[in-house]
Length: 462
Image 1: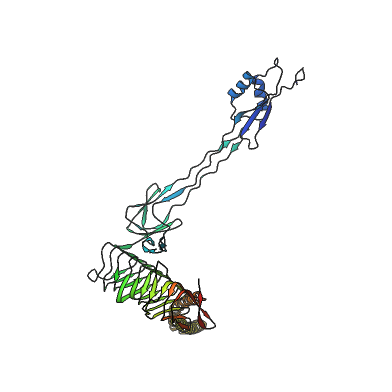
Image 2: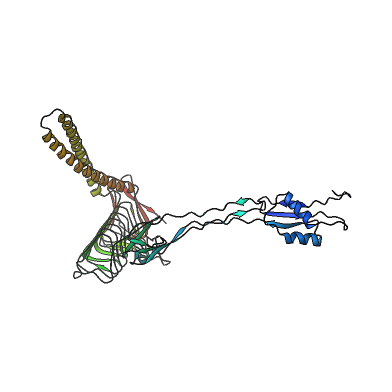
């Protein structure tokens, strides 16, 4: 208060985040006035020391801006740093299933299970972290910025790293795979033309990609996946992973397909097929197909005509049989071969476990004798022979147990398996579910075959 009783103390308000400060000059009579020093003293008493705009304060005093708040100080916000990151220059999100087009047909060219890179190709760049910049509020307090964090370098094999550690390039031609910060480039066999008897059989430890066709009599074996762009004719194909036939197989009764992964095919004719995974195709004509998962024929007018098709986990097909009433057999559920194999393996596992127990008992007995026997050398040799036998039988037993678990998994997948016909099922189609069988005598639309009370029944899906 001055002598006249009029309050002349400037009012300072600081925002909750302390990043802005406002000043309000109380209204006074015309003969009274504020000075810049007087206002700055009030500012100082309120602790505002950073970001002060003296020009704004001078302007308020000179123009007598009273009775309203004016922003006069601003803090500097912290600028958070950015974490380091990798830019990858290859597709690591592969499409492992074909896409269905708007017309209902299936595009097998959309299946992309192998990403190939060339030697010297840049596969990744590392963008280093940004440190960030601390801020400060109007009271002069430091606002710590979030510091950018770095990433560990990529690990794996098949690539080189630049001296500065920022650029990664492929060291070989091959298939590239990424799992988090691990990159592996593996050899791949890529053939731009056709494969025939003249080319010779192919037996490769990695993935095989053939951009042409595979002719009659050729044999291709790959430890990983096989992708064939052209038509296959009367050949033998063995894949340790997936098999992709973008233009199908004309088997001519000579073709055989063995797949440890999944099978994708445009069509199959007169071909024997064994697949550990699922099967997706447009059609199968007079084929013998065994899948330890599901069999799906759902593109456009996809069909199974003639032959025998077994899908452990079920079969889904647009059309089953044809109007010529060709005998067509489909089976789902537990295949009798699997039941026989499980029984054989269970017996074998018991026998090997008993033998292993006897070996362990023999080793223990020899160890007890070695302390008191005079002929220690002879006992040591016997013990060594038993230890070798133990290692060998343990490995065999582990392998048999793993195979037994795999087969039991197939049995588990077969529970509740059905045959779904999304369009037409024709006469002379034999449907088997586990040990039950039904033969169609007439044509039906949209039918699901299920097992009920140890018999196959038909249920409408309309």
